Every structure is written in C-alpha cells, then in structure tokens.
Amino acid sequence: MPITNRCSPSTAFAFNQTQDSLSQHKSLVIGGAGFIGSHMVDRLIADGHAVVVVDNMVTGRPDNLVQHRSNPRLTVHVADIADAGALDGTMEGVKWVFHFAALADIVPSIRQPLDYFRANVDGTMAVLEAARAHRVERFLYAASSSCYGIPDVYPTPETAAIQPQYPYALTKRLGEELVLHWAQLYGLPALSLRLFNVYGPRHRTSGSYGAMFGVFLAQKLAGKPYTIVGDGTQTRDFTYVTDVTGAFVAAAASALTGEIMNVGSDGTYSVNRIVELLGGQSVYIPKRPGEPDCTWADISRIKQRLGWRPRVSLEEGIGRLLENIDLWRDAPIWTPESIAAATADWFKYLGRGKN
Image 1 (cartoon, rainbow, N blue to C red):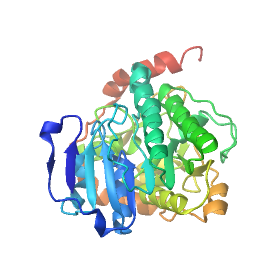
Image 2 (image 1 turned 120 degrees about the vertical axis):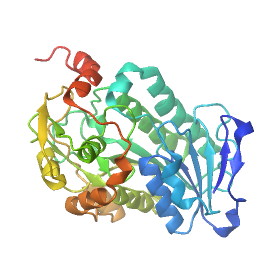
Image 3 (image 1 turned 90 degrees about the vertical axis):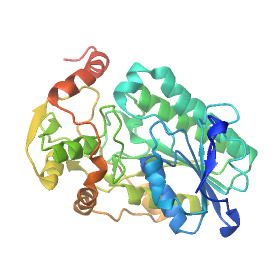
Image 4 (image 1 turned 180 degrees about the vertical axis):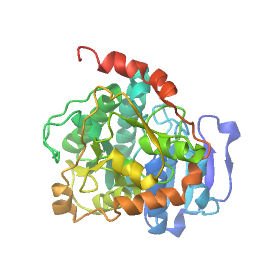
C-alpha cells in the first residue's frame, strides 16, 4: 500500500511499489480512509480492482485501511481535495470514481459553515472537474438523506421536497446539485445515491457528538447508560455499510446517468429497539429540534433500476457491531451533561421560533 502525503511532500513514504498492472480496472475512492469509504475500498479490492484513495485524514483514519497494508493494489494519497492541484496524478487510468469525502455532523456545521462549504461544495467541484478532464467512465456521489429535512411522506421517495435544516445537509445537497449539473451539461456519467443512516464497523468515533452507534457502543464498553434522545420511539432507516457499498458497485456497473436514488434498509426501526438489541440500561435526554421522528427510504427506484436490494438485517448488523465493539474502545464517552453542552448551539439555532 504505497502512501504519499500531498499536504507535506517531504514526509511522503511507501510500503511497496505501486503495481497498477495487477488489475485492469482502476478505481478512485475519495474519502477512502473514512467509515463508508474504507468499506468501499474493501469491496473493490475483493472484486479485483486496483484502488487509489485520496483522503485528508481529518475524519478518515489510516487504521481503517490497515488490512490492506501489504497489498500493492492500493495506493493512498493524503491530500485535501479542495486544495489546488491536490488531485494531480491521482486519476490517471481511473475508470470509476467514488466520492465519499465530506465533513459530517450537525453541530460543527452550524458553528463552522465556511469549513463545510469548502469541504462539501468546493471539494466536490474540484473532484468533478478532475473527473471530467480525465474522462472517467463512472462518477458516483454519496449524497445525504438529510436533504429531506423533516419529510412529509413516508417512505420518502426521491421526489420529496428538499428542505435541509442545517449547513451539513445544505452543503451535501449543493454538492449533489453540482454532480447532476455536470452530468447534464458536460455529459459526465454520474449518479447520486442518497444514503440513510448508515452503520457498521469503523463508524466515526470523532470528538464531535453525533452518530448514535458510536455514542452507544462507547457507553456500553464503559458500563454507562445509553443516552436516548426523546422517548426513543423515533425510528431510523438503519442501513448496514456493506449493503451501501453493494449499491455503489451496482450503480457503477450500470449505464444510468444523471439520476438520484435512495439507499436504505427497506425498513425503519426505533431507537428503543436498538437499545434492546445492544442490551443495557438507558437514560432519556431532551428531544432536539430539526430532527424527524422517522427516516425511511422509499427504495423502489433503485430496486427497479439496478436490481439492488439490502441483504443485512438489523439483527445481523447489530451482531456484527458487537463482534467488533473493541473498535470503539478509545471513543469519547458521552453523558447527559456533556451532550447538553455539545448540543447547545443545536437548540439555539434549530429551535429558533419553535416551542
């Protein structure tokens, strides 16, 4: 796994020599050291691809790719895609581009909207232009179902109203608009997949309060109660990460372009059910404004257009998480008090004008 650091060329190093000749099919995964991106790398490597990863390692982690350390078919570039020239040389011979890189989490996006615009909008523009210049065969964008805000329809189809509630959702939607425009105007063969509540091993464990499973698994390891928002009856379309990577492969292998498709589990599950499967005590904390009571993807389109269907049940997915629970051993342990402090801006801005 050769690695180069484009942020600081003097610190570049490599484990092995690059051997792109080992595979006739070369794919680029932007954000490939992150949660979903690293699983995408796993799938592509297993399918025989040579894979190039570009990741700035802000939320991505080298450890997410350690299983490929000795594999010469993986090359990693440490770079910020929004920097001029960051993608130079990374797309030579690439057929498929998978764009997962983004800043995530709600509260940091409220506090630092310019950072989110740069990463999620400017960064996407840079990747699109590099892909267009190199005439890639397929461009796949990881969009967010947060663009639907608080939906009016369940299950929620791709035609539902777009009503982002915070800068993360807005900037991911703007990135999607760019992708669709590049497909329409320039003929870039691109698709956008809107992801619903993806979970699995390597789920983010950053210092920011955010993804539920990362919070709950760290609490379980520490013997602390799960902090359930509201009464726990709210439901989410929890979708296992390998089902998501399967959807991306199906999309890349298709001839479709300029379309949006939801990716979900074909169900919706309460937070209380998750706690029941994880086992342990819980406490309840105040419900937050700007969050839907339900997320539930209508996946009729992707079933019909790509023949894709989710394979991993919620029970099986939770079992796999528990088998890998040590991955969260160093994750922050959140308490009701620390969550209240971390989400103060959430209530301040998203609760404005609401009772």
